[in-house]
Image 1 (spheres, one colour):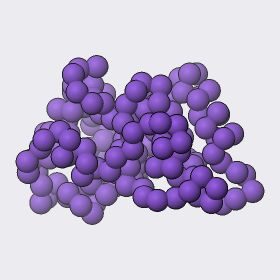
Image 2 (tube, helix red, strand yellow):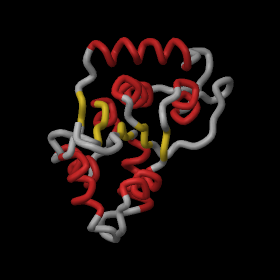
Image 3 (tube, rainbow, N blue to C red):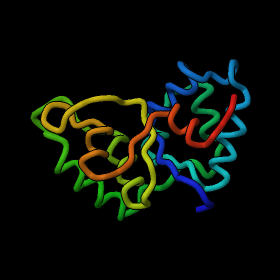
Image 4 (cartoon, rainbow, N blue to C red):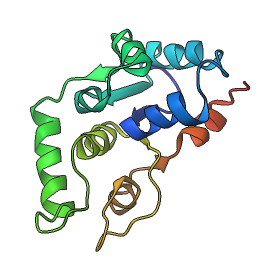
Length: 154
């Protein structure tokens, strides 16, 4: 990986970026910056994130970034199994699921930051990405914090 902080990005951060907060029609300068971050091997997403993306311009853009998605190899699968055992109660409807544990596992195994749009939660009632990251010692940030940390001016 090139110098600088590396990121494992969640579907929620991608959607909030593209659809809600920094839409490319208003912030066109963000697209080349994101592509450059991917090209520097500093922004990645678990393959499960791709599976969560609905059809549309965001999915099309993501699929056009050949280095964005990381295959979920055996090591990631093992880490996800451990995360699910620790933080997902099958008797509850809340907790990390779908791409979430893959996003966290990818960051944990590589020493990266997790970027998501999730907030709050608790390990007892709603073990979401930020609370699981906190429990594991993985840095969790929101998309805006990534922009600020990169020093990008739009």
